[in-house]
Every structure is written in C-alpha cells, then in structure tokens.
Length: 270
Image (cartoon, rainbow, N blue to C red; front, top):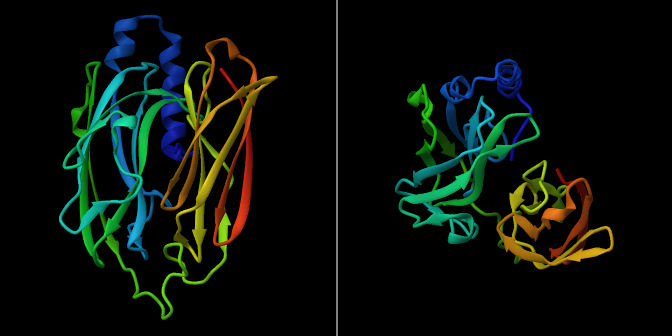
C-alpha cells in the first residue's frame, strides 16, 4: 500500500544521507517514525461517496531500521469494521480498540514502512474522525508525529431503485478489477506475500466469490490461501527462504457479477 510521493522522495534522500555514516547509534537516533491515516482512493481525499470504503493506516521511517511496532486505533461512533477488518492473522488483538503488532520492512520507495488496509462501514453520511498511533521499539526523536487524526466526510447517496444487484454496492453496473498488487511490494524470500485485486462496480466496492490462487517459483508450486473481502480478492503465499533471487509467479482468480477474472503477477524475491 506504499505510494511514490514527494514525502517518499524526501525520506529516500534522508536515507542516502544516513548510509554515508557508519555510526549505528546515530542511525537509531534519526529513526523518526510517523503514522498517517487516509482513504484508500487517495491520500489527499477528505470525502467519500460510499458508505462502504477502505482506510489505510501507514507507518514510515526515514532510517534503515527494521523494527517491530505496535499500531493502535479505534473507530468512532457511527463507523464499524467491515468484512476485512483487524484480525489475529494480521497480528491484531481486539477491534475496539484494535491493537496490532507488525514489523517495519523495506518498501518500493526505498524507505522502511508497514501498514494495514481495512474495510470500514458508515451507518449514515456525516463527518467522522479516526485517530491512530504507533509505538516503535527504537527510540524516536520526534514523538509528536506518532499519532495522526484523520477527519473526513461520508456523502453517500441513497441506493438507486432495484437494490444492489446482489453483490454489494454499484447498482447493476458491471464488475471491474484492478491489477494484482503485492504486499510487500518488494517481497523477500521466506516471507509471506499477499496479492490483492481491487473489485468494484460503478465505483463501489463489491465482494467477489470463488477466489482461487495459483503460485510457483520455477518448478515449485506454492499453495495460496484465498480470501474474499468487500472490494478485494486476496491470495496469500508463503515463500521458501531458499528462493532468494528467484521469480515468484502467480494469479488471483475470482467471480464478480457473473464474470470470471484472472489477474496475474510476478516479482523477484529479495
């Protein structure tokens, strides 16, 4: 869920400066961990026209320290977690609040990061605020940016006559599917890799069905774990440690609004 942005480029520049020195204590001292909450559709948006949407909880660091972190968040009155919310498989305990333990790892921007993408449902249109905080393991020189409050507005219109067409929002519009995106974007051998396809109809998230996964590294076939969520088809693969430098290839197949989709992906394991 990383994105190439001015902020990412600035952080990457800081990384280059950090690699010049070899003093480990200075590297840790510069470990400024930040958290940001934003809508899945774009980090500059403050409104959504859907009652069902996705929020990103993103943590970044300007240093090269891969460290365990704890993320805490709680939904305000009027919002609830959707089909794909915090769960133990993601290192989370509870949902009110949700307390999640994960590890910061390298991303495609060249920084260290971690985060979650979860479904959220609003009971009604209105203005909401969500606050999330991160607790790093290493000392942080600036704790003021370890908490972020995201204020946004839900401006959903009433559902059109005839209902939702049997697959969530989107009326009777045809289903569309994005390319498969990997998390982490630069997977490493021995790590778990999740391939996610965004599924929508008329701009609204819909839930796919019959999700099937296929994966391989050379002649070795990998077993994928399928998962269907509101707006997403997900396949999770566990890669072998001995596969460093080899290519992971796979596909995410599913059905939505009577159509069958297959989205393929490939990535070289670091």
